[in-house]
Amino acid sequence: MAGSNSYTIVEYFGGDDGYRCGYCKNDKGNFSHGMWSHSMTVQDYQDLIDRGWRRSGKYVYKPIMKKTCCPQYTIRCHALNFQPSKSHKKILKKMSKYISKGELPTAQADGEPMDSVCEEAGPREPTKVCQSDLKVVANADIKDEVPNCSAATEVQKNSEDSTAGSSENFQNDSASVSEGGTDAKASKPGLGADPSRPPCRKAKDLRKERRLQKDQKRQHGAGISLAKPANTNQPKTLEEFISESLEDNSSDRLEFRRFLCDSPLEAEHSPDGPEMGYGSFHQQYWLDGRIVAVGVIDILPACVSSVYLYYHPDFTSLSLGSYSALREIAFTRKLQKQSTKLCYYYLGFYVHSCPKMRYKGQYRPADLLCPESYTWVSVEQCIPLLNNSRYARLNQDPDAGDSQAVKDVGRALVLHKRTVMPYIVYSCKFKGRSDTAEVQEYASLVGQDCVERILLYRS
Image (cartoon, rainbow, N blue to C red; front, side, top):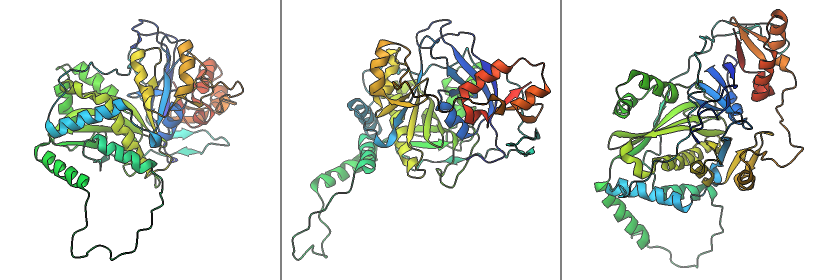
């Protein structure tokens, strides 16, 4: 998918040191492998998250499942077959009631569980790397020259579904995807309808229309818009939202932008892809001309990946975390009509050992990623295994292995002094370097296909 002049460039950091766990609060119990990504194609990131990686800003990390205190399993929802549960319908109804009548729930809900941010393991100071003027060492599978990468085009696309969804909207969307064809009964012969009179309408439809007309007179202005992280022309900018949400502390604002606004993903467009293209976006939730929440999402070749959601604390009782997940599932279904392969919604990590994080398993049908075979297993099959042990091989087929297991680490691409070369060439040119074990570990974590496309930076 990526153009021939696009490369993913990463620095690998290993994962020997433990850091604080955001789930169980263990000071040194969380372990993960990490990479700083200077740039990344959407296909490479799709392949990486299908091997258990996840990004936090430009930092990409993979939990060391057998070692970390709270194993984190990648989870995905089958968006086309998703059916909202009773609790999901209540959340949609609660939002619809607020939009139409302006009534916030009287009982303040507890803050919704949020994903732990990989902070203390986080980005070391990255090396400055530029994709332009890269030279390639000749090899049977590598071109002689790597041209300059074109700059990512800034895109802003207003979502066609600009009205915050009610339960009726979501159920209608669900029905439109799942309903099959039905045989119509033949009507009895007769004179037919009187063409001089308007067609008959059901009383139920008339009542619904009158109710909507009343609601439109008093409802709050609500909508959802999609924008590139660094660009918005809406009445209230993201910067203003940040200013309202954070104290006047420059370091906090820098960290906020580094985590939620920066992304390594290169914007890409494909003839058979979604009209807004692939890459990182901010899905902004509006009420009365004011941003109340922002969902950070990545649109990838096979999925919409939820990165994070942050929202105004005044609206905590509306369960915006769960509401945004439902809207993102509906958005995935909409994109699938434009790109048939894009049919999954990734919710990040499922943490069974942390009861508050088990809610992600309620968006069904859903699968968890087996940490050994890198195959998908339904949540229903995984839960009994995880009830018995924090860590488990989810695929119970003993013969199932890693189809992307590295067979030849010499084919790994490395970037050294703006020159691209296979690792076997690099190791021959610099025989004094003792980084073979590190490169082998990196290669085993990203898989054979990625190791032959991604450029591993070598100083």
